[in-house]
Image (cartoon, rainbow, N blue to C red; front, side):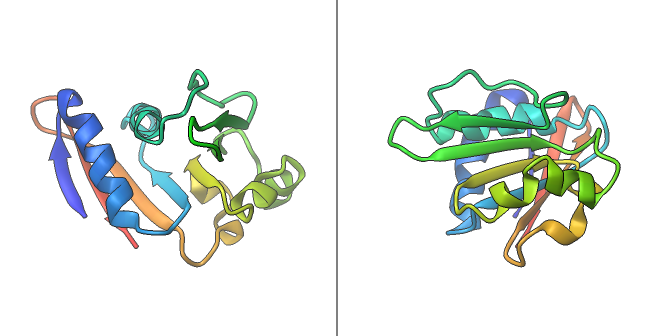
Length: 137
């Protein structure tokens, strides 16, 4: 999946992204600081009907949200972690293999922890204040 979108199109793109990943539950978000990772994850949580307030887990590392229809979404930000050992200690590996949705920012901090069927999502700025999303399955 490759799409360029504006902020007013983000909900439709999030819906299409969830359809594109099929039964995968782990989405790894790659992109520079300010690329829109947290904003896109917020839109995904809206589509997943998360009933909790969605916020950046930069300091907590892992935020856990409940969906209206039941189920859990883990939102992780690995930016502050030094290595995979620290990620394991924080509970990242347990969440990744829980079977629940895991939306992970900065996955390059612990690349070997991710399941084989992870959907890798790349966000980058595009012209006219838009973003480009590429999903590799």
